[in-house]
Length: 132
Image (cartoon, rainbow, N blue to C red; front, side):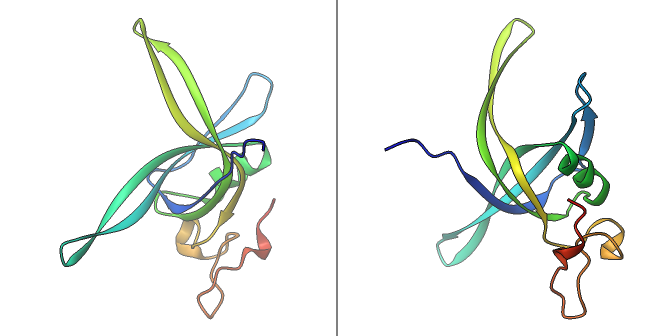
């Protein structure tokens, strides 16, 4: 049986998206995502956050940068990637996610007025207007 590398995360952005471009002109946006896991400790439930860095490429990167902000809720589908680099003579490495799909779940910038994930009157997000 072959290997499978698929990640699906639903969480909130911990910071505003950071858009940059590669030398070849490809848009790359970096997202910081917090995903909470509720754990019962004794008689009460506590949230244990997991922090994940996500890279988004191409038109989705530009759209994510335009419409998302710190606190936005998003659904990410992608794959795990392992990065390795040198800093100050030390080798460092990190596991992060390369997004294939970014879906805006909650209100976008401006409190959900306009934007691709603005809520309908019933409170459900309208993802039909997403520009990608």
